[in-house]
Length: 183
Image 1 (cartoon, rainbow, N blue to C red):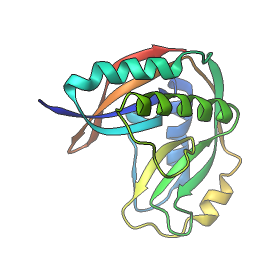
Image 2: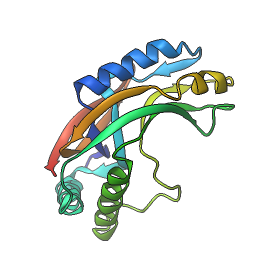
Image 3: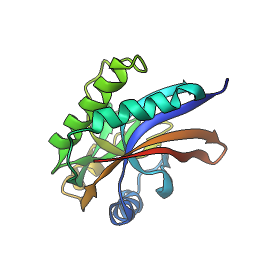
């Protein structure tokens, strides 16, 4: 049996992804390993390594979690850092409009995966975001984050949820869609 690094995500769409790329360039922050454009997404649940024989059950649980959710719009807006801009490890773009819908969708998918015995809920509260980059040694970027607080990528439509695999390669992760669930 093989194990596949698996996560559940929302695709950003071409327009929002393009604006996130422009933001990466505009930020000009040193010491960041930027996320490649083709890998930008909004993670709902990170499952980690899943046995390949369990992937059908994962897709079925995600479908159950998505049931009853209608398509909605989200706006990718603002910039922040985890754990904070003074000691950043990750720099991200947030979600404005549609954040409540994303949180509700994530909670439903999370509950379905937990109910199927495929996942254990994270202790940290879910905070919808798009990772832009990761710091090796993060210097204080408080001023940069504040300067881009009003940045926005515009709205994008969320009409499906993706079950994805992630294979770590030398140039960064390579993602493959394992399943699609329409809203």
